[in-house]
Image (spheres, rainbow, N blue to C red):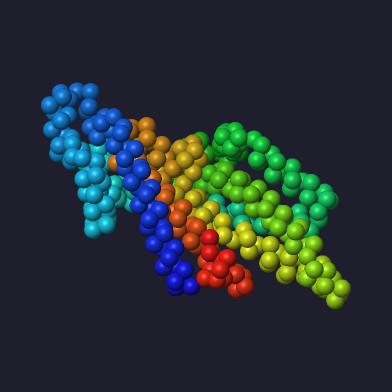
Length: 318
């Protein structure tokens, strides 16, 4: 296990360095407007002096080396030049990450609470009314663009709850009512996803020999379905839960922007609009780290749920 973790950690570092290098180079190909808040009023001499002060007139490899040196030695992600001029990126991210963590955590909990029982009951009553009802829900969520039902939830949900359509201040964030609609919006897709795949895995498991043997021995259908079939069907899904959680933690870009939630998703939209290159670069780094960590945690969760899975034997490594 230790050997596997060390190997995956090194691979993750290499992957992260490649992603950062590509993003760094692409950002440096963008117009220099994103480094000066008053670019339109600056003379060519002032622009050149500004680029020199920021080290942007140096060769790209030198800039890349300086970036990695600051990141590794000081954890420095740079300074915002447009979004909040002169403020370190870490200082901007600090108050927004907890908001996205809360939204993502609540959304994942709701998704698991409703998605897993739905998938289990659909498998248990395959071909019957509940299965058809769950299938209709899944098809609806998958077929209708998310933006459509987000707007529907916002418009009618705010009228039903008697609240404003967007969050304006800290008092709104402290009110539990303002979290209901964003959490519901972010949960629907995952509820459909968990229900669909759990049903599929449970239906496949229910056809295997050990299930037939359990029936021959006289085990009840509920015991077979919930203790054996569900447990084995849940294992292949488990590897996606950490990634799903971490992706919701960093925030849904559209949901946070739609409801005015001051989290990571809304921040990304703002910095892209403002062409704050340093902020874009930092947020992409955060997103890449989240994806890599999610994959690693998914592998570990599969091993914890099913000890028969080995990450060190041949065929057990991805």
